[in-house]
Length: 162
Image (cartoon, rainbow, N blue to C red; front, side):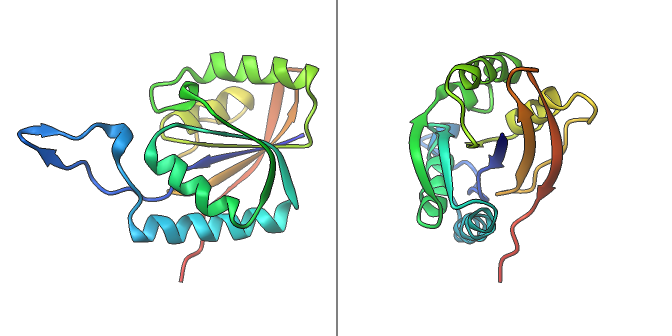
């Protein structure tokens, strides 16, 4: 089973509003971030015709990233999960996802999330690798064996924009 772990596209810096910083969850993609998401979506479309399960962070920048990818790659089921925000617990999430995939098999799963969650999740699934740094809209491809509760990192790709 292929697991695509994606970081959102480039987001704008937090803005100050009346003396306080806007919530991290509200940050939007920059124009470059949209272009990165489109480029990543094109790459993903070359890898697979459809995704069985997509899990997206509720943060605006992750939602916007997936919206661009969704225009290029079909999905059977899409869920929003607060478990894959920057503060999420990668080990807890991975254990639950792998257990779920034992009961509900899938050929391909896409997660759209954030640093540092994506790097720690990748390292947890393939314990042979150090947590990789993800470029914005970067995608790690992990071959996962749900019954063995582990994966093998195939590589991390960065989007190529014009």
